[in-house]
Every structure is written in structure tokens, then in C-alpha cells.
Image 1 (cartoon, rainbow, N blue to C red):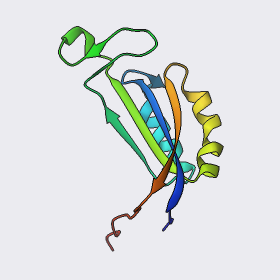
Image 2 (cartoon, rainbow, N blue to C red; image 1 turned 30 degrees about the vertical axis):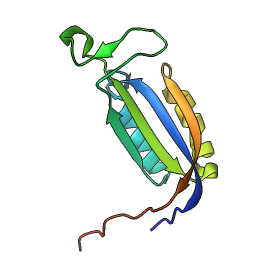
Image 3 (spheres, rainbow, N blue to C red; image 1 turned 90 degrees about the horizontal axis):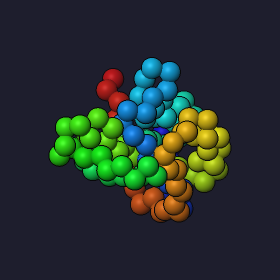
Image 4 (cartoon, one colour; image 1 turned 90 degrees about the vertical axis):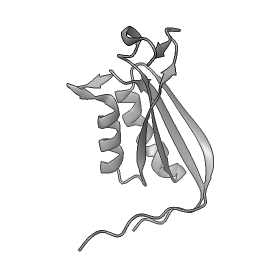
Length: 115
């Protein structure tokens, strides 16, 4: 099991739920690439309201604007691993926001795999 503790880097990718990559959701492609890259983990969070560079507000409150809700993908790992993964994000994210934050990992533990 990978140990991750102490200083780390968090990358957060903000995209639209309808953004795609080769006929599948872009967030799925990002998560699968992060997994293949051996990163510690990735989570996708669906927003209920938001706006970005286009200034168009997307919300669950209006049916016509609920088709492209904001999505955030959060990945945390060592700085070296995250920085090595950034070129893949450059390839994938044509519209959106990618940010990096220093963070401190207090606990990183997975479930035991069933035998």
C-alpha cells in the first residue's frame, strides 16, 4: 500500500459535467488516467450551482441550466507525482480551471481488500 503522509500537493480541476473526452465524461477520463498514473486517489464532486469564465450561472434550480453543472475533481499526492501528471491535464482540459495547493496529509488509509 502506498504511504502518503506529510507535505503533499492537491490539484483541483473545475470543469462542466457535460465536458467530454472521446464520447465519455471528461471527469471519468481524468480519474482513470490518475489511477493508471499510480496517484494516491481522485474524487469527483458534482456542484449544485456555479459559474466560470463564461459567466453563465449553472444551477439545479432551473431545468434549462441544470444540464452542465460544475464538477470538481480533486487529486492529492506527492508534489513529484502531481507535477508529472500535469501534462495529461493540459491535454485533457480545454475549458475549465486547474489549481494547485500545498496541503498536509494527516491520514491516508484504505479499506482492506476482500480475500
